[in-house]
Every structure is written in C-alpha cells, then in structure tokens.
Amino acid sequence: MIGFTLDEEYEALRRTVETFARDEVAPVIGDYYEREAFPYEIVARMGKMGLFGLPFPEEYGGMGGDYFALCIALEELARVDSSVAITLEAGVSLGAMPIHRFGTEEQKREWLPRLCSGERLAAFGLTEPGGGTDVPGGMRTTARLEDGHWVINGSKAFITNAGTDVTAAVTVAALTGDGEISTIIVPSGTPGFTAGKKYSKVGWSASDTRELSFDDVRVPEENLVGERGRGYAQFLRILDEGRIAIAALSVGLAQGCVDECLKYVRERMAFGRAIGEYQAIQFKVADMETRAHTARLAYYAAAARMLAGEPFKKEAAIAKLVASNAAMDNARDATQIFGGYGFMNEYPVGRFYRDAKILEVGEGTSEVQRMLIARHLGLPAR
Image (tube, rainbow, N blue to C red; front, side):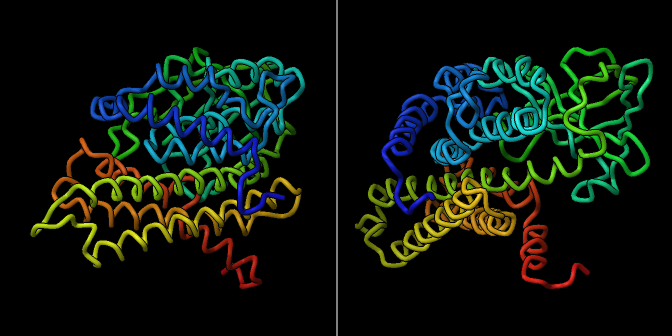
C-alpha cells in the first residue's frame, strides 16, 4: 500500500529525476520549445537513466519497478517541462504498455527491450479525426485478413511519438469485423503507413504529435495484440492506468507553477516591497500549493488501489479530474502573478499556461471523468 510519504526507494528515484530535470532539462528546454523541436538528446539521456523501463520486468530490459515509480518520474519532469514528461508518459503507458499487458511472449521479447531502453519509441493509434471520445462509434479504420496478413486502411489523429526518428511502431486500433475492434502492431517504415507533418500546437511544443494514414498497409497476422475483438477492452484498461499517469504529470505542472512563483515573488519589487510580502499574493500562492497537494494525494490513492489489485477506475477518474483542474488553475494564477512576464514564452509559467489546457482533454476529457464518477455512484448512464 502506498502511504502518504515515499519510502526510501521511491524517494531516491524522485530525487534523481528532480536533479536531472533541474540541471539538464530546465536550462535547454525553452529553446526546443520555441523551435518546436523534438528533444532527442534529452530523451536519450532519459533512456540511459532507465526511465522508459521503470514499470517493466527486468527480463524484458526494464527496471523491475512499478507504475507508481513511473508516476513519480512524470511528476518531477513536469515540474520543469510537460513536453518531455508527455513523451515519457506516451512512450511507456501508451506505447510499450499495451504490448506488455496483452502481447504474446514473442512480441514482448521482440519489442520491449528496445522500448525499455528508450532507444526506440512506440505509439498507440486510437483516436480518429471524426471520433474523439466516441471510440467505437467513430472508428473508421479497418483491418481485414488476407493471405496471412492484416490489410489496414484508415487514419488516426493526435498520436504522440508517432513520427520521430526513433519511432519503432504504432499499435493501431481497427475494425476487424462488424463492431469488432482489435489492435495490431504496425512497424515504422511499413509500405502504405505514413506519418503526417507535425501539428502546430498551442502547447507541448517540444513533443511529437501527428496524424497517421494507412493505405493498404500489410503486416503479418501474428502482429495482432491479444485476442481478436478485445481491442476496445484493452484500450479501456490502458486509459484507466494512463489517467493516473496524466494526473501525476498534471500535479508536476501545478507544483512547477508554485516553484516558479515562490522564486519570483521574493525578487519582484512593487511599491518598495517584494510582492511576496503582500497578503493578496500570499493567499494566491497558498491556494496553488493546496491544489497541488490535494491532487497529489488523489493520484497516490488511485495508484495504491491499482498496485493492490483493487478496482481503481473511479479513483483514476477522480485523480485525473482533480489534477488537471489544479494544473489549469495554477497556471492561470501563476501567469497573473508574473504579470506581463507571464505572457512571455521565455518564462516557464508562459509554457505552463500553454501546456495546461490539454490536460483537461487528453486521455479522457474532464466531462468523461465526471461521467465515469457519476456511473460509479450508481447514477444512470443517460
């Protein structure tokens, strides 16, 4: 059971990632962000640290840790930058985790060592241009069996880590029958598989997000992940876990806003005094710290239930809702405290403000989280 304080192993990991984020990410990430450039050098260092292998068994090249260890790393990275944090989150929970959870032994041994090392990345092709939250109703991508191969046609939208120079594969959700959704591994470079140009995004500007297209893409039948027709159930499990990870990332952003404000209010002078001496500013910072603290407890609680093998869907939804709200509110308050400087991208809070909004949308909107919570309270679905 995860307590309210970290044990020695978790705390050592937290300090290690905190130091890496402060000393190696913070000084350079602003430049990547402004250029909308993927931070290959930073990702490579993260791989050498073992961050991409944190929750995976050692036999597949992982670190032998657990999902909570991943969450701790995500929080510390996001205190400095969310583009780097989402690259790790998507690479692990959306890229490698479906193969680990549902793949065959052969698939695990083929793909996981490279993904755990961070030398290669994987993505999860779920969302479609016209689908959004309505995954089964909006699914248009199809896959049919032909001469021992899956032939895939369709497109995906908003896919993270899908088109980098180190992307190894995308696990694609597709209709394999009437109302039947399955997931299939499509290696990068497969003929007919095309990653579009990078989106021009409001935030997460140093991460890779693209639209994908599949034009008679042929992959071997054994690239099916898990049972045929179980793709939607797999997706629901992956998203439940991913919501805890996104909650941790959101907490990191919320705490990063507090960190930056504490430094700024001690230095910024107004009317002959540091602005941190004014009660109006003190109360705003106190509210920000309260939000971050409360959201952290929410994702700790959800992670504790997950690791204990207990149902955690409701708790994951609560954590994601509370933490994304905290991130958005703290980013807005931090920008207000910084005034005009908060509107400048050269300051971290400007990036935090741009990055925060997507946390209320990605891996299930805030409205979806409220719907899930209401259903678990026994309220009707419609």
